[in-house]
Length: 100
Ligand SMILES: Cc1cc2nc3c(=O)[nH]c(=O)nc-3n(C[C@H](O)[C@H](O)[C@H](O)COP(=O)(O)O)c2cc1C
Image 1: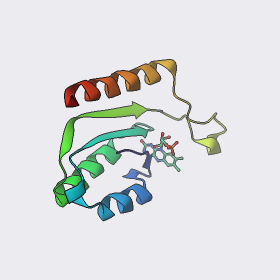
Image 2: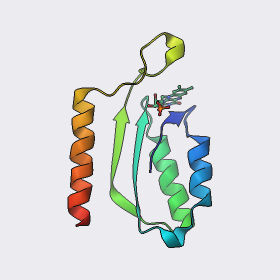
Image 3: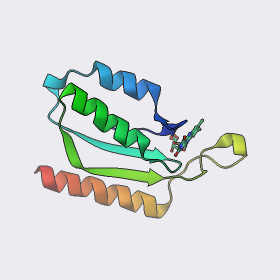
């Protein structure tokens, strides 16, 4: 479960999606977020999951984009670096191993 941070908060559509989830149908979630810097989306996801009684995997992934993706600053879109892609692959491999 994941998304970006916008004006210090998680994406509104992600929040609404999580609020509508049927907890009974979910074993657990793994939280990730791309962000300028803040990890507030992950914290908010964990908060909503707790409220709904959804288990949260202990692993979480925060990918800092800094100012990438802020098109209004004239910067190129938020493409991931090779290092970030490797981090994501390692993260998902670790989760898959742990869940086996
Ligand atoms: C309008 C806007 C507001 C943002 N606000 C924040 C913020 O408050 N804190 C932060 O750390 N990152 C902020 N960011 C950075 C985004 O979280 C980051 O670029 C993220 O990777 C965007 O994901 P997306 O490309 O899937 O939309 C903002 C980006 C945009 C475009």
